[in-house]
Image 1 (cartoon, rainbow, N blue to C red):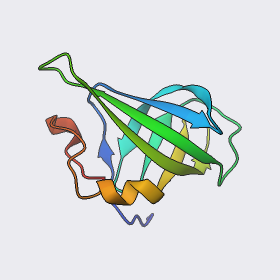
Image 2: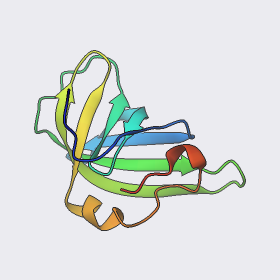
Image 3: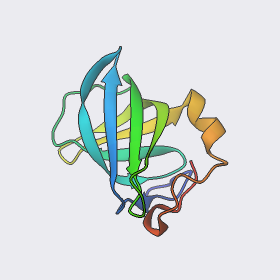
Length: 111
């Protein structure tokens, strides 16, 4: 049984995560699951090495309006496999753990 510091939540909302490495955009991906400690992105197979620092921009679209919320976070690669990349939040993510990430019921998690 694997041990986790924070429970994961499946992401069913309209969310896109844009990845950047040293200011260069890598691509945009769908989050599979999310927790206060990190995120798993559906990237397919990738060659990102462990401990690679990345900048993430979460774009959340609201189904009730034309508003898109943006949240910037820093993370490091914790895992890279066939199904995607798992990242651990660091630095600026700590201040967001007390805020609601989304109004949408399927993503009611705090980061």
